[in-house]
Length: 88
Image (cartoon, rainbow, N blue to C red; front, side, top):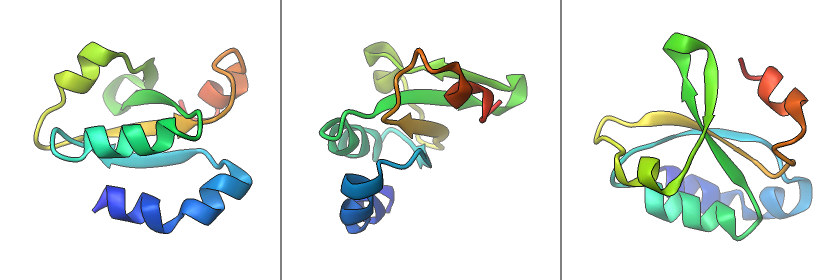
């Protein structure tokens, strides 16, 4: 249901461009990532066990598992290290 929640939040996303943490899996990833990409979001996989954010690339999108993984979507520049520091 992540995709439907994002669609329902469209006005907030357009107006405030918030950082968004959500779970993606093989079934929901493409819709969610395509939707947020329209608003210039960048994506990071959250590796909870390593306290790291890993920039998502096309290969990782394909390798997503059915059980899902947490993802940070941000519209801020990836050069802004404070975004990363806030989530690790």
